[in-house]
Length: 458
Image (tube, rainbow, N blue to C red; front, side, top):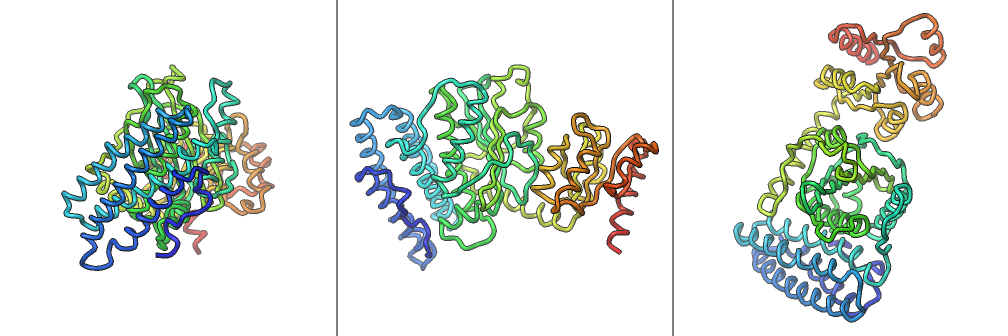
C-alpha cells in the first residue's frame, strides 16, 4: 500500500472537528484502495466501504457547515454549493455506475479516483480557506495587478496542494508543446454570452509524481485512475481560482473535456487568453490558461469546437479513449524527427505543417521569443526559421540560439524569399544549416528537408 493517501500535517486546517473527519475520510479511502482487488470478497468489501465513506462524508459536510455558520464565514454559501454538488450530483452518479456495472474493477477505480481527487483538492483549497490559510477573495483590480495576483495564487495553490516550489517560466505562454501533455478544459459560466474557459496543461510526469504517488501508484505512466483523480483535483484548483477572479455567483462548471494537443492549439486561434501562464514545478511543467471572450468583445466569435464533453455516464470510456489515443500518438511521434517551424505567417506555418506532418513531428511558433520558449520546452531536431519576421528577425533569433550553450548545436534552416549576397553573408558566422526559398514548390522544400536528415543520418 506504500504511503498512498497518508495523512500529512499540511492537510490540517487547525479546526479539530474538521481535521478529525478529514483524517477519517483519508483512512477509509486508503483502506478501500488496498482492499479493492484483494480477494473474491473485494466486491462486498468495496460495497460496505463505500457506504461507510458516504456516511462519514455526509456527516463531515454537516459538521463543517455548522462550524462555518458559527464563525459567520464569508464564503459559507459558495462552500456549501461545493458540498451540494458532490453529495447530490457526483456521489449519486458514481453509485449508479457501480450498481449498473455490478461493481466492476473499472467502476471501483473510477469511484476511488474521483473521491480521492476531490478530497485532496477540496481539503487543500476550500477547506483551508475557512481559516484564512489561503489567499482571500479580492475585488476589482487593474489588469497588471490581476496578472500578478493570479500568478501568486497559482504558485500558492501548487505549494499548498502538492508541496511544489514552482517558478514562473512565462507570463504569456503561447501554447507550445512540452513533453507528454494532458490538456484538460473546463467551461464555467452563467450563460453562453458570459463564460470562462479554463485550460490546465500538465506534463504527464507531473501527474505521475504528484497524484500518482499520493494514490500509492508506482507506475511511471498515467492510467485511468490517475487521470480521474487529477480531473477532480483540477476542478477544485480551478474552482478556488474562480472564487477569486469570477465575481458572479451564477458561475459554475458547465462542461469539461480532455483535449488533444491539436484541439488545444485551436482554442488559441480564434481568441487570445486573458491569462496564460507557464510554470516549472520541478516535477514537470504546468500551464494555466483562462479565456473570457465576454471581457474582450472583439474576440467573442472564437473558434468552433468539436470536443466530446465528459459526463458521469461516459467518463470512464472517454478517459480511457483519451489515454489510449494519446499513448498511440506519442508512440508514433517518438519515432519521428522533431521540426519547429517559426514564422509570423499563419498560412506559411499551416502549409509547412501539412507538408511535413506525415513524416515529422511538427510544432509551431509565430515569433522569435516563442521559438526560444519552444526550444527550451522541447528540443527540436531542426528549426525552420523565417528570415523576415517583425520585431525580432531570423538572424537575431539564430544569434540568441547560438548564444545559449544548450542550444548552440541545434540545426537551423532559414525560410526566406531573399538570398541576396548581403543577407547571406550576414548570417554565415551563425552557421545556418541551409536556406529554403519560399518560392520553391512544396515538393522541393520537402525534398530538401528529407535530404538534410538523410545526409545527417549517414
